[in-house]
Length: 345
Image 1 (cartoon, rainbow, N blue to C red):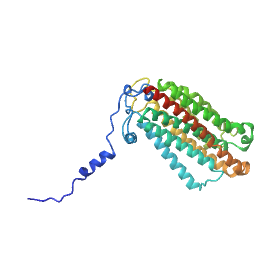
Image 2: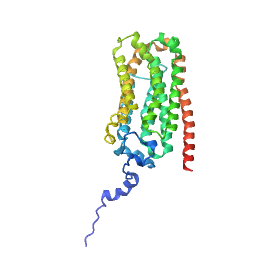
Image 3: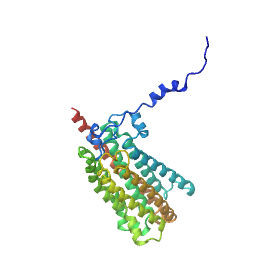
Image 4: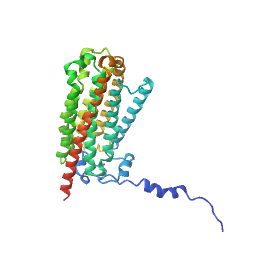
């Protein structure tokens, strides 16, 4: 009789552990197998089933479905944003002082918008309809805060002291804060009230407040383009590219192109949702690069022209729309939960 002291196969030992930690993911389902709330117009397949466990939602990053490209475009953009900001801070010796704090707040709003909220909403929303609402409302809050973060940085770095001290400059940030809150509130409201409609209807209803907020936010850029023309070439060209990318992303946000011409053929790649998020992520990267140029241009004279106390008070205003939008989102979440409970009775 031969005795064998060989160790068990590694795969034999580890397989039960891997199966418990990494459960097999269920296959994707057609659009008719998910609630209308989760459907996209002209996207007929590739949906993750509703009610996935948390682990499966996260592991779906490694699965091919109709939101895989959206998830990875947001996560990779957030990583690129983080690496670029870290490199800029290291090379320029950036420290958190009154002159650089608005840039830091902008970065926090941008990274939260891309990674913490937008990517999380796309990864985890298939857990349940209630979680879908909650994550979308959280995404609306992050989008509004990001809008105000852009306005804050632009109002300090992308214009001169004359514009800042003018009447338009004085009302610019309060007006932007109000528009950001209105944009958040309307996005949450249309999501809840138009839930039985296809996504294209909800998108168009959300476009108006977002478009108005964007036009107001771009006010400093328009003034600078008019007054200084192309004297500060790199930053202005980057801002121009940002506007072009935003307009293109808005087009794909509103219109289901190209999937409307061939329903079902662009379910997994190339549909308007994928293109929109890719362009929007690229727009954020270009915007950050432009703000780096303007930050270096305005930083030397910023404290002398505005004073440290005024800069700090301006930065504190960053938290006002955040609080207002968060309270609005919580109220809408309570209403969504009540309506879902009413439907289940």
